[in-house]
Image 1 (cartoon, rainbow, N blue to C red):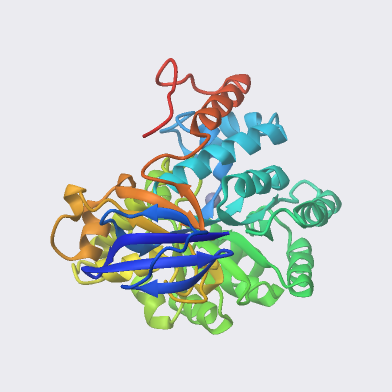
Image 2 (cartoon, rainbow, N blue to C red):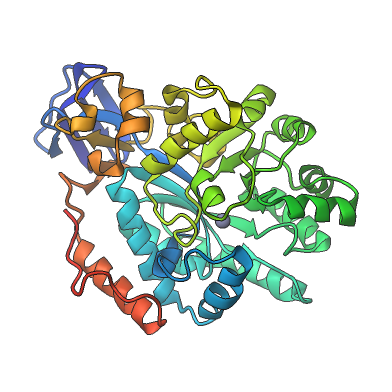
Length: 426
Ligand SMILES: [Zn+2]
């Protein structure tokens, strides 16, 4: 399988690219298509790397618009959890396909997913052609330790061979929903199998005070004591991390994924201390969190909110630049999230072509245009592992994904469609 992209632009200069078997084999001004290549004429579009979404609950697209604007616990207890108990693998499959469709359309090439029926999510990722680390949420409250361990091992078995672009992980939900014994067991399993692990950490302030009361230390130190802080670890949120925790996380080589839009929507009352994390040397990625708490999967929106929120919090408009924000969103500051090293020979052929005619990109500095002006709709074509997932705004099979996701949402008694007959996006 080979692909040739011609007529693209990078840094104001013409550029072409060839990929074979998912890997870039040629890139430069003089690259020409070969007879056997699938062709993608960029027609002047701008070539950039794809975006990396570090934290999702993808299938919650089905819950979008269901119980918005409620306090967090009321939303979970009255709206989300009762429906989640009725979720079938098919619901997760089509909910994840819908999420993948949205991510392809807005330029995400890889994501880190934590959700029920992970084997169904993995199948959806594979069918959509994206890359993802997929993991079941693990919860053992109420004496469920044995069942949780069986579920963890079962999910790893079910995810073996789930597809070339799918990686199996583990996702203990949080330190307040998984016991210390079970977290130790997970830490050992993660080390033994050399897999990645993600956990929600320090999203709210009570989570920190409860941890100190129960264990005598703050959350990052608690995880370290358990053996769950390593280069394999991704911590989502990290809003309330203090300097000593940030130093520890950096020393252990763990990654923090910040989810600024979800933090604002759920009113967690704080802001991830990015400038202090950067000074400590912490690896940082960007995430949307689930469509129930964001509600969008368009990382362009999250980039803008991340940069604005950090500037506002620091009372310093230079606290984070557009270029740095773009690097974070493309996974450059968090190698553990699995982004390609860059658009160069030997690297995975994961990239985007951005509409050159988009008014938002017509002049000025590109990173500023991407972070402050552009929506995900400026993505014209999306390529993952050398496969064209969206060509000139068209994703194959989009109608079926919309129809089937809608059927699942209806069966679960979730929100009615906004339009009577949804049609495929253009
Ligand atoms: Zn989450």
